[in-house]
Length: 318
Image 1 (tube, rainbow, N blue to C red):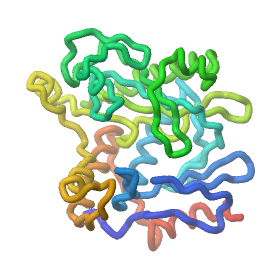
Image 2: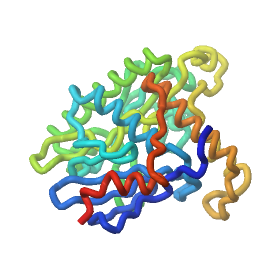
Image 3: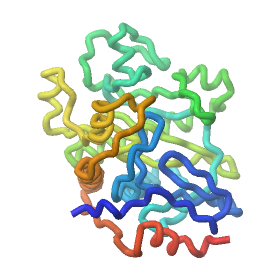
Image 4: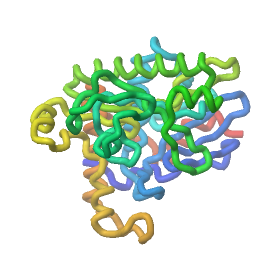
């Protein structure tokens, strides 16, 4: 039974130095080129926080841990240690200004997704040429990278081609060659491992950064339910035949509930009922177990999640 009160809605810890608070993560820069990244349970959509979902931060941290462990032979990553189920101590990196999205299927619903562009008649996109006659959600002839500029100032990410990335000086040719090669290898590993679990890794985003020596490392998270789209292999063929959306981990339950009741970009968000929050927590837990093949064990130590996190980070207090 999910304890709806056991959430980490924030990790504001005044004893830790150099805070930076994002939509979902609360971070602190240590003086020795290390960084504390704490995954809260906040769920974000429509450029605002909707609710806190029990165990979401633990699920995402531990799912990323599973994938970091299984891909370290392909690309080194930023992780140094895990002092708490919601926390990563990582190398402080200079994040590269290009977000790398790898897509294996003609899917998506946003204005910049390849399915949306394809249905508008475009066949040239992100520097790739797609053939005529592809169906919604069909596998691409081979996975492609659809990079976007990384908007650090709250602006919108813009589609890029490899040639534009080089010509605009966003990455050097050597950096692009390395990042694109690694991203495709990571995606191939992800698809291969997901298939053994009865899942299809449809698309995902990767973030890379450089350390003090200029080495490119994988940062942020990898192949989590928040950074990736997964479909359930059982039911995909039928959905493709019928032209319907393939079965997936439906994390949009809260988003759909909110959209049905207000304009989330302008109106106040109605109070989200407990059963909706519990259902979303279960989606994240089910996703963790399906992706990793491991049973999710919530860490219920400490009077609250914040108390537990504080205790596990005490040695970093200034």
